[in-house]
Image (cartoon, rainbow, N blue to C red):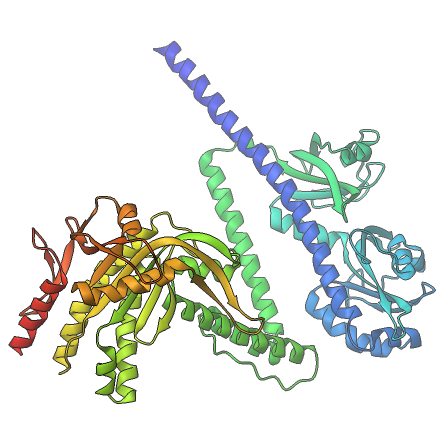
Length: 598
């Protein structure tokens, strides 16, 4: 037993150790991936800020005049809002026209007389472009330290290059952001492997942290990553040394390190460390948010409050800003955005009234490519019997209210069964199943809709009679066949619809419900697609108008083992059908029974 216990202990220890090592390796790899993703985000943010600056009105002319005061008045608010430390403006000769710096700290008086000779400045002033555009980013060894700069040309009113604008972040600022986002220590290394900056317990030039592998950057450019163990501040770390990728090229060495004592820590200690680390991050985020919220006042607070209302679902939010600076532009853009959101919400709500959620979402998201194509679909057409007589006895306002009430009841049945309302034709409804979203069970969905419309008609008639109105009867025709589905119309007005002989046949089948004295008729093609789940009546051989051959049509009775809705003393309720078919005669009898009660 002792040997078994020792063996079990060794096996469990190795399994736990292997699991922790794998977890550690995965965490280190994830940290390395996240670091390069964050570097790309920083580059994109600097490019976006440069777009705002270079497109600001009058910037090119101000550079040409050397008007640093006008440049500062325009660029300073953008720099403050962005949070980036460094903004430099140079003229075509490479001379610095304006340098915006933090009010205090080591960068307060950071200048470099050779800024015009920097590679990114030279390319920007030459107006050259590559596969990534005309904005260039690089890790620049300035006289005041390594800086991640992005440069963009600025053109004057005549199209000539008036100069260039640079937006930069210090290496310390970049590393702090990377460390905060990845929860790992990050280091930058020069071409010869010397340490530039790090968040480890070390300083620039620390020989103990130098990458000693000769030509390590060339090895990294070939797609390899170096793994090494290092010691800093009395602790052991495992570091992955890859490349700081800027504009798809390796600008310097980039190390991501985690302490190896993570492997030997217990599960409880790991959980405590993660909780503490998470708490610190949350507190730091809260403190940062409070600090920023305290600084953002006036129009900015108005925008924040409006955004909070939008986040809460209020699409009626509107911002009124009386300033004439960039905040006004932001407010106008916000108001325009809200108009678009309200329009989209209206369109989404409107779509939802005529088609299923899946279809409306597919159309709005752009996943549905509308265009003319041949589709095998099932069509359903319903019509109110003697509607002309009914309409003559009602005021126009009452007639519209009646139709809206009736359509709401019937459209719910269509949408529930994945159908799409193609059009309303007076009191008639044409619904399509199987287009624009393919549905292999389109015939079954149409048949279920017809049965549910019959059931809902009972409730609708009960409500009509309770309001003192006469009940109505409807006829429903269902047909399956090939149609052409797509956009029909002109460049000004288009609609998605279906056309073809199957559509005409559906309308003629619906017309036959009056002659055959039933409420639901299905074609032989629909009957063949339904299978044995539905009970139908005796077939009728008819020659549809426009066709030479006879067509078999069937009264649709019920879904085998299904329910119907009947009118009882307590009102409409579901009744299990044992043997009696739910025919038009049965519905007429129930309506007459309800009318006699009241």
